[in-house]
Length: 354
Ligand SMILES: Nc1ncnc2c1ncn2[C@@H]1O[C@H](COP(=O)(O)OP(=O)(O)OP(=O)(O)O)[C@@H](O)[C@H]1O
Ligand SMILES: [Mg+2]
Image 1 (cartoon, rainbow, N blue to C red):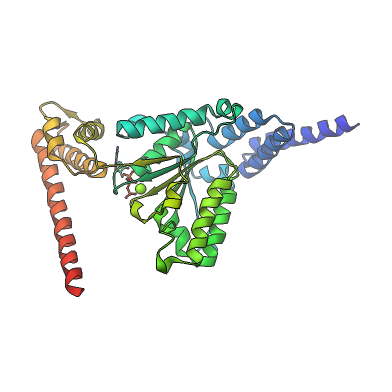
Image 2: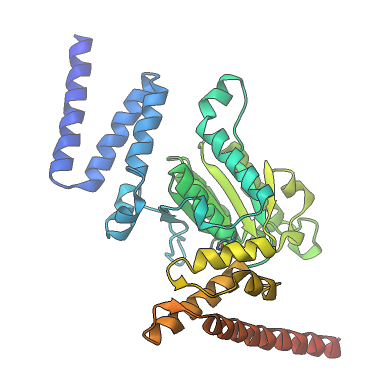
């Protein structure tokens, strides 16, 4: 009797699943699929439940087509929004990227590959009472690949990237910030992601700073606790270019800390090659240009290459010349001079004011 009822309920669920699929009702399909996964989980078919969940959320790993059609977000539950402004608190993106997309130091690459392996072989580690690395801190100057690396990790792990800009979360009223964080974490719990907390310093300011006491201290603590208590098998990444603002208690919470320095000579050469792949060039001494680019970031080198490629194409040419690349580098250097001069002027004005 009981078995019959169970079989009927299951039959009804399968009907819902098939009906919603054939009627292209994505929300209903998602709800039925989620129910089915929950059933499997209750029956202690944990591995199957997890696999089904991954397939449901991540498709076949070819995220581009999903991300580019307008219905992409409907594969996921509706995202939480700031109650005051109505802005979404999280953004979901799929990335079809591999390690080739980013130029990394040997040290960082080794840590990241290890992290990916640990997460892929999670079950083996768990069987021995161990946990894979799940909390990474990315720091270093702007434009050196922190965000890009988080995107690559998401691509390599075949997980969606859940992007959270903490300046947005933190900009609303203090009371509301705590609620926002709670809602973000409730959302995270629903599946497995690579979660990127960008501009982490917006919330994790040194807790001992005199003007940051009380409410902010409480919020920093709750963010850390929320990460620690999270049952989601997600990989958490916090990124900042103001690492000096983070206090010791926060550093200690991360499994790995990666510093993204400005690229070395070899890395600059790799970046030039990486961003010039779409164009032909023969007599261009990239090593010489890489030497001239000491101090440039990955973002600077990408811009220089894009400039040079555009200039080549606009001349109805399809082969990059040394001169064109030289001119693009000269423009970058001119730009840097303007920025440095204006920074110097601002510092002088600040000193005069004091
Ligand atoms: N190491 C790198 N390898 C390849 N491309 C890079 C690298 N660093 C920067 N870039 C290029 O510059 C762009 C900007 O880099 P990214 O957004 O990852 O910097 P960031 O470190 O997150 O900076 P910010 O601190 O300002 O957020 C990237 O999308 C990429 O095109
Ligand atoms: Mg960034």
